[in-house]
Length: 130
Image (cartoon, rainbow, N blue to C red; front, top):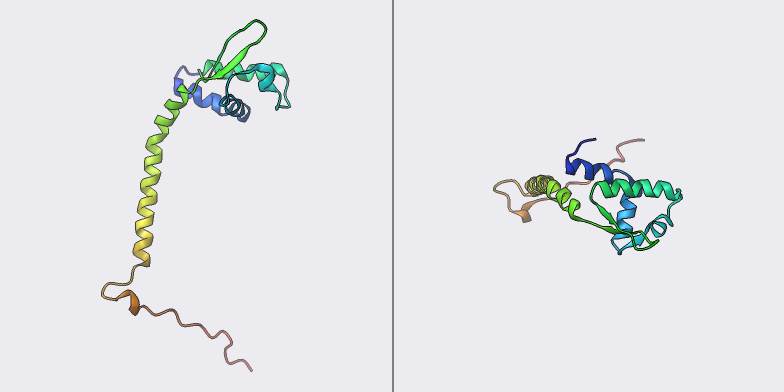
């Protein structure tokens, strides 16, 4: 595995269970048992997911007697947001260009006032069938 922080973060976010854990931690600290409750996987499996999230810097774990609270650390997500920002700007620019093109297609031909446009004549699909 690479040591590139962004790659490690993306790898941690690739799993839906880990993303769900992060979502739950947005509400505040939770114990491993609390985090495991909604999942139909074993406690050791949840612990493995937590280790991946911790290595990526997305969570912190501490110890308070027998209680092992986990907390969200959203800083690595800032790096993801910064990286994706350029792509957001790219797609917004594409959508802006598409909007301009569609407006051009809907504009009346040069020299014709919008009120002079005539609706398309209805077709007579009945024909001269006997």
